[in-house]
Image (cartoon, rainbow, N blue to C red; front, side, top):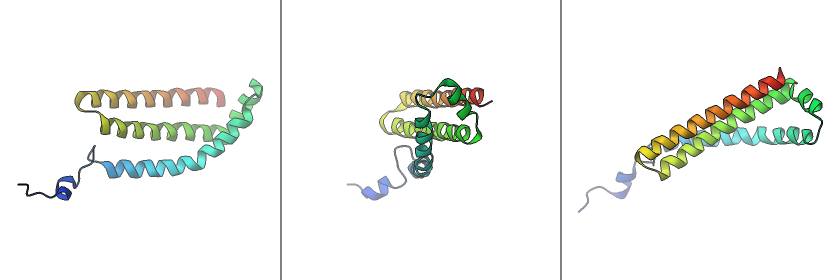
Length: 123
């Protein structure tokens, strides 16, 4: 006979034991990305098929460079948190740790490489 109710056993338990913080982070970053991604798509779409010099000139201006950096940083941070939540939900033990380390390393590496490339273009 169980003395704990289902609610009592589930209270404070998420798959990662920090579900609320992850959820709110994902909600806030999704709203932020919902505002900046359409502007980025419009800017990037206007540069498709343009000559190399025009693309470099456009990305050398402050607004397009900052917008590209924001999309890169916040998009990859959103991806990192989402992938980490998925890994925590569906994997266990050492596999979970290894996959989380790989995802975090990959996203930081992509962010650094993207910002470096953007800085080379903009400067």
